Length: 274
Image (cartoon, rainbow, N blue to C red):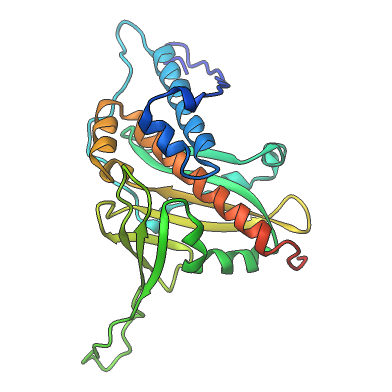
């Protein structure tokens, strides 16, 4: 947009990144799983496109905006990717994985969302996606274990609210620490908040809507992963270039959603029709 004329333009950017020609660190990450290279490419193309847009909007009196406030993830209940399931985006969903990045007013990441098409009804898909064991296919998650609920008894005569389900995640990826304890509210299945670990405060949520034909569901993963806190390298990179906060999120959202889509294709090839 041009603040002086209130005119708007749509900027598109296409890029193919040759990860194998980059440094050792990027090559190592790209080899971790089948979706890493695409996720890294998506992150890079977003940074380039957003940087160009910021430069295009700048004038001698207006310099490109850089957020200065501390990174603060939203609560899990705020995550919403409903816009990616809109009927008007059917063509884009059929073309491949559809993603979006929502920015907070202060310029920081609000959350990223990724939409995939999976076989099955929205109801059964939502049930599968709210089961923590399903998330064990997330790249970088070596194990997912439920933590036994507290056995302490309340002295109150009224029934206490249900305790959140806690799961312990152990990672198997270098250069980033994803070990964490996640809390899942019984009242909001499919939504999780990291309550322990370097990425404490990270959130993600699954949602499901009718798909683009009778046998599919549009499943959307939204997240703020706090990768800026997951390691020294990530922290330094985001401090040097704030756009990488958004880029890391869209990359992780993509690989996690793509892994789920692949897993569902193998496990549920012919789920029930709505």
